[in-house]
Length: 91
Image (cartoon, rainbow, N blue to C red):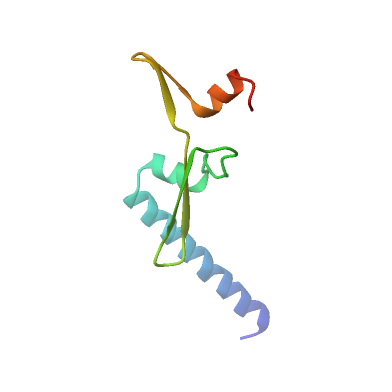
């Protein structure tokens, strides 16, 4: 078997594995989960959060969670600390 045919066989094998993975994903997960996985919307650091949590997974993954705490103005309306600072001219 020459180099070109080995590469061709390898490429076909990789394509088949990728096809099987996609089939398994579609059988296991909803379309919404797959969309969020492949096109994440909240994938950046928040510039001025009120709190930050960091979780380290056993497999080496790291997840950072950001939170802006709301301030109660009335029982029917809340604003965030960031909005309050902007409104007060402190930000």
